[in-house]
Length: 97
Image 1 (tube, rainbow, N blue to C red):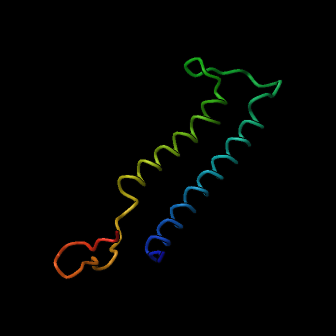
Image 2: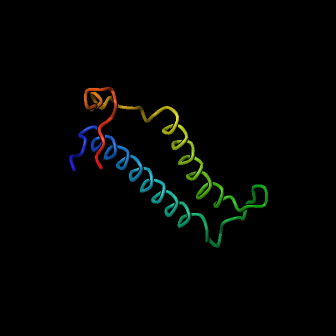
Image 3: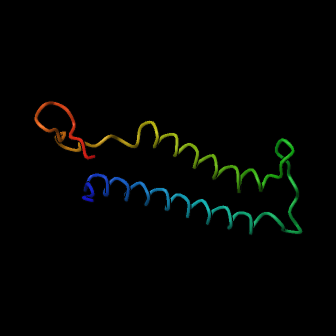
C-alpha cells in the first residue's frame, strides 16, 4: 500500500512532539519528587489537603500536558492538502471490491 508523504510527515512530527513532551514531564516529575518528596528536613506543606510536592511535581506537569493537548487538538494540528480526489470519471469514488 502506498503511504502518503503528507501523512508520514505529519504523524512523525506529532509523534516526536508527544514523545518530547512525555520525556520532559517524566524527567521533571522524577527530579522534583526525588528532591522534594522524602526529605527528612522538609516541612510538609499542604495545598487543599494534598502535599505540595505532589501538586507541583505531579499535577503541574499533568496540567501542562493537558493544556498542550487541548491546544494541539483545536489549533495546532491542521488539515493538509492531500491532492486531487481519485474518481473513476463519473464523480463517484471507484469500488475496490
